[in-house]
Image (cartoon, rainbow, N blue to C red; front, side):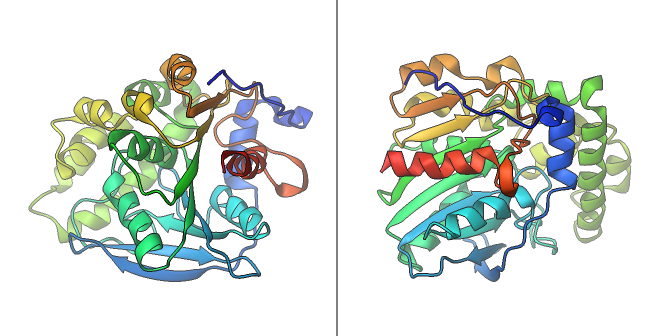
Length: 319
């Protein structure tokens, strides 16, 4: 499809991508009542799902996926859930493995390409909950996962009607390189600290798979992916993980109406993460590139973010 013109105009102070990103990650607050459900996965592990519901009974559901080291109570997830609930659509905010406040059972956890876990949630929503219309919305890592899920298989369940991917690192190797640049050092170090701290907990239970020395060798996010992500999930090394898990290669095969919203001033994204060619060649793929917004920082009026409004608009036009 043609590239979409964006109407996003942030308040003046939030035109700065760094400010918008930091404010949205640290200062935004959203109040939402959620109910937790634990589902068992085919490999014996579990996922914790946090549900919120519309006032009237609904057969429509939005599945929301968080980003790296996020969880289902992050405002960029609950903000969308609340807006969709107010528009008669139930929401389930997924906590990836190990992200719900309790470590998962296996040595593996989650990663950008772990679409088998998304598939489990989709099947649960259809087979156990009976939803007939399902929408997908992912943020950052979760956005890449949704795009890969939709494009790597020949068919997806007919109940999936539309998808929205926000601040999506479609090309993981390029995005990883951006995160290692000086401009992103604060974000890089924060991510690394959280990931390493969680890995220390996992090491206690899996000391045969991971040594204390190996954890001490992790100085960068790239090291983390080499030491843990790749080895725990069946990849040769970090680059192999980035190559096989990037959604960019799967975009041409997407058959579900899908909107990608990537801000041009998102410091996490490399040029390859703006798939202009792929969007122009696939009638099901819509690409919107606002000038502003940083990384998941699409601040708008009344604490409802622009990407959340656009997601609601998009699913209405896609049906």
